[in-house]
Picture 1 (tube, one colour):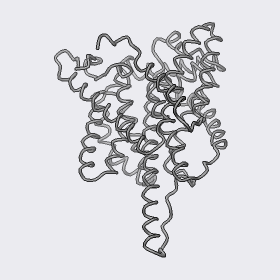
Picture 2: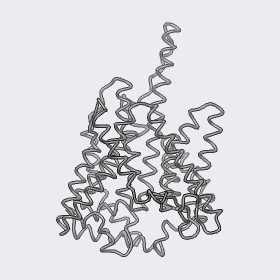
Picture 3: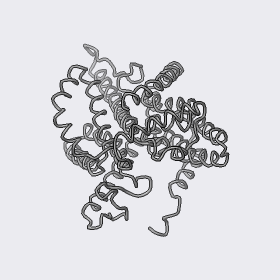
Picture 4: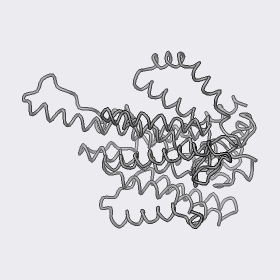
Length: 414
C-alpha cells in the first residue's frame, strides 16, 4: 500500500517482538553467536571512528543491531519447541510461494510488473518488494527455504508428500525464474554435501560425473552470477580489490558500507566484503557466528544430544519395546529437524560466496532458528550440552587460515 511504503514495518515489528521477548520469555539464554554479533556491533562502531566517520559508525552499528542482533535473539528465543520451529518453517514456505507467484505474474505481465508492484530486473529476472527486491536475494531465500519443504515432504503421509512435492518443485521453479547462478551453485553444493554425508565419497564422485552433462546444460540456461558487472573477470577483480583494502586497513577494515567508496562495484562475496569492511577481528567474529551455527546442526556430529538410540537385540517386555520405539521416533524427528536446518544454513553460506550479504536480515533469522534447535535438543533429551569452547577455538583457527586461502583462490582466478 502506498500509504505504508515509507513505514519501517519490519523494524517496528522486530523491536516490538524484542521487548515482548524481554518481558514475557521466562527462560532466556545468550548463545555464543549473539555475543559475536554484539561484539561485531562494537567493531562496526570502532571501524567508523577509525575511518573518520563516527556518526556513520553509530548509524551502521544501529542498523546492524536491528538487522542481525535482534533477529538472532528473537528467533533463538522463540523456536523453543518442534511445533514452533515447524510453524516458522511453514511461514517461510508460504512466503516463498507468494513470491514465486508474484514472479510468475511479472513474467506474464506485458510491462514486467507483478501484482505486488515490483518489476522484473533486467527484463527477465523476478523480484519482490522490500529486502527481496534483488533477484539474488530472492534466489537465496528460495534456496534456504527448499530444505524446509523437503523436510515436510519426507515426514508426512501420502497426501502431505504430494503437496510438498509440488511445493518443492514450485520453489525450484522460482530459483530458475530468479536466473541467479549463485543460487544454482548453492543448490549443487547442498546436493553434493548431502550425497557425501549420506552415501560417501565414491558414490558422490560417480554421481557427479554421471550428472555433469545435465548440470552443464542447466548452467548454460542461467546468466552470470550477477548482472551488475560485465563479466566474471570483473567479479574477481572486485574480490582482489577487497583483499587489497584489507591489507591497507587490516585491523578494523574500511568501515561498514564503505566498499563502494573504493571500488566501482560491490564485492559480490560476503567473505571478502566482511574482511575488507570489518578487518581481521570483524571477519573472525563473523566466521564464528556462521561456522558455529553450521556446527550446531551438523548432521554427523557425534555427541550424545544428536545420536539415535541403539536398538537392543531383544526387549524384556512389549511395553519396553513400545517405549523404545516411541523415544526413537521422537529423537529421530529432532535429528531430522537439525539436518534440515543445517542444509538451509549451508545454502546461505554457499550463496553468499557470490553475493554481498554479510548484513542481510534473512541469514540471521534462519540462524536464530538453527541455534534454538541446538538448545532445544538438550532440553528435549534432558542432557547437558557439550562445551563449545574447544570448537570455537578451532573455528577461530579455521577463520584465520581461510584468509590466506582466500588470497590464493583469488590469485589463481585472476
